[in-house]
Image (tube, rainbow, N blue to C red; front, side):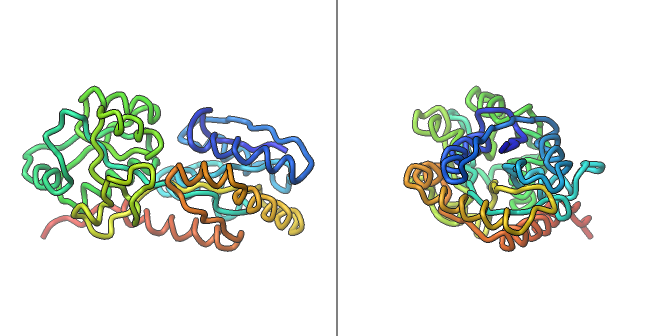
Length: 292
């Protein structure tokens, strides 16, 4: 069995795949190999699995970018998220955190929003790439608060965090796991998390709603999928084994540390969630109406 990770090693998606591979291998009695196939914001590796139609030995550790966002902003992806995959279960949903450099004058979200509204120029902010949840959070934030902003796309989250720590950029939304160490060390200041509840990893950081921006949510989600046309019995067996793996204490603890509760789902619920997320972000990506 192979689990295709459509990103480079070391990120959250790769971590999830390796976390699951051992209990799945034990449960299903087959060796599991993690295959990192990065490129084009996750689209290259995702397309690899789409081309493996009917192959029960090829799985995808899928995520919101390639499955719900890229179809809205890119053509000729080489796959159709609705037709080319068999959802198995949602694995995790991780919040983002709004961070600023330690030397930033913004000490809370309300003062930051007031300041941004008063600027007479566009504000630049970094993202780890086109189609990322971080980009969509930034776009939604600028529109909701009401200030002009332009994203600057880096080649991943690591250089984004470096730029913020160095004070080269004023703010960003980034994955909780990737910035919690800098926040605790004092090299970054966290103003809000984008989940409905505070994150156990940073319990002193308010939610966006608590900090002055009601109903603002954003983040990444991840799930296990196979290619289209998998036999029903295979899907049922993979689903049962994966849900059991998610419940193992060391797996559940690690996912909780990532800021995610247990959100495992049925295949049908996962398919419906992909469609709902695509519809939600279509509204964010649609150009705003011109003023009257």
